[in-house]
Length: 595
Ligand code: DMJ
Image (cartoon, rainbow, N blue to C red; front, side, top):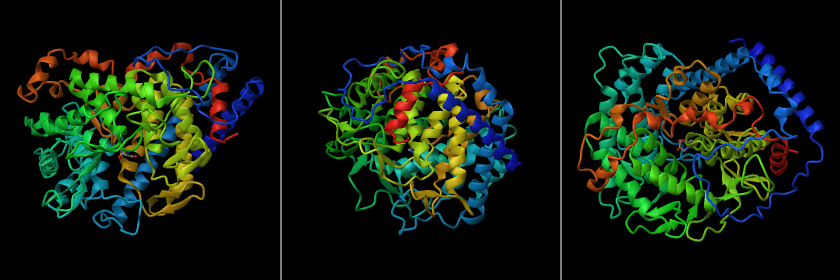
């Protein structure tokens, strides 16, 4: 790849867009920006119905109006530039992956105890190699995919005296094994030839072996909510913690459900679904909200904070994604109820993203029982939420929240783990190469096809190259202001960050040509949304529910829930305009201390 010509191209694009931004701000005077971010508004009374229509209007200050139909913006991003950006994302993945294989594979999978930020996710089972499998396929690299799959089959064993987090092992390892298995056995082979000679479902068997080793987490728990950790050889450690976060315990259903359906063995789905239902039954009667940490024996909430970030994020995500995949109406009902409570108690700011007065919409952390504000920070994990909103068609609201996180990114060239919106400063300073903002950027681009999101992706890609690239891969930023680094490249950098960046710039990717055949797990692994995951192979799982499942939506109705099918919710005339009026863009920039 011609790196120098890419840099030149990006520079020209950037100059062009910045000139445009200058023009817009010069033409949009007297807009009365807010000085601070007080969140004076009470929670909104009326919930947003999921899937509400977009409320776009072309007012005087709207950037798109100034651009006369947005043609100028389109010209700023010629297809060749997207191709160069796609190649740069591919190069980023290749550099990270090759260096992992050269320096870390089968060597450094044990956590460095001196590194305080590292968690016990690694498992000593070649986590990064496994997590990267389907990214290789999505990038069409069949030779490396085949090589990597064989390496996994030949070298990885879960028969290890290793204590792992059930959640992390599920989303990173189990999910990736299942995704790769689905890709290998796909009769259509859309990504090129990803078949493996003499493949005998080895990855599926490995997935089963791992899941069986995780099952002790679901035993001897009075609530059905699983223990957070298991030892892969010996089960629950004697000193085990009885407390778990909601996301960790309640976001296992997609992977466990797929496994059950591929094997025709209901056990895995049953335990995962029981955990979701147990957590759901513990929500507050008043607010409908859940807390972030619960005791698995007593069912008491240890952490009463309710928010969209750490501890709860993927719980919401998997209610919707389980529905998309398995078509059980109860999952959608739970999701809709949760979404309503989120809108009622977590969302602050003005009613509509692109209209009206007041602070921009933001989702805060509140007490699950009272709905009272608990702190004034938001975390970087919450940046996934606009992507989830895209899936349900709430694209307008997604645009605003995404814009807020993008402003934070612009200020630091990364997302601090926690950002204090009142102090306009980070509370927790590290950035471990997380994917959430790229993920939302990608999904918003799919929904709107607005080149603005290509620009955001370009910005993110450039910051990653500038601040996190090191001799042997990409490094966690220890301090987003000083840009000091840690010796740590999380596996989700390859499985999610690079993948979403690549897909953002790769219009022609088979994922986009499939008519919403694919869904991404919370770790960014693609799984096919297909009939074989919708048919229940058993009738006695939760008998009372089977009746309601008769009401399951048909697969083509489900398609409307997934991904880019919602793009027509943003009116045509706004597809190529900037997604947020300049007054609101600048308001956010000012609140984040950018201007
Ligand atoms: C990923 O492992 C998953 O997306 C998870 O749900 C939470 N976030 C991390 C990456 O930030």
